[in-house]
Amino acid sequence: MPDIGMIYRFVQLVATLAVSAAVAAFTTPARADALLSRGIGTTSCAGLVADIKPNEGLNDPINLMLYAWVQGYISAANVALLEYDRRHVDMTELTDVNVLHMIREYCKAHPEKKPANALDAYLKTTKKMRAQWQAGTVEWDE
Image 1 (cartoon, rainbow, N blue to C red):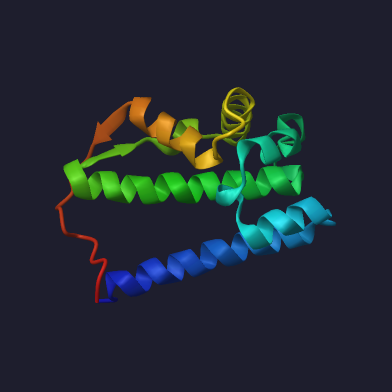
Image 2 (cartoon, rainbow, N blue to C red):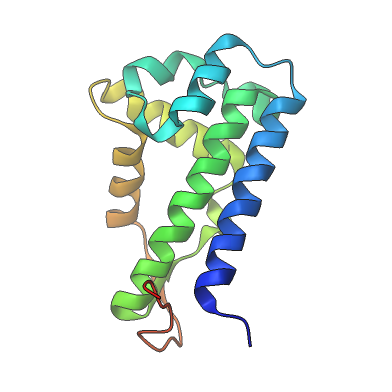
């Protein structure tokens, strides 16, 4: 049976490559290039809010990058929640439209914060679902 750590690293690699390839598939403006190299999660809301264009959906490279980053952030949070108390967030409500509006509205209201703060607020307030999960399933260290 494959090592869970190896599977985790493989999933991270595939996700990173998929986001990079999707962003590169567009004629990437300089702003998207900077976000890709720096990481969208480290960008201030003030620096990001004007670049989020919900009406363009995932056709916009910054929207696509933001949406992929949110999916990864919430997925990682779900693993932590499952390990902590066997609960997780149902990600079906996190459509591209909902995510883009949520982050943009949060960033408008909190320009001094970062997009991760919007997701932390979402994670604190959204309903969690119970799951059958055995704590210690994820081996973080080798």
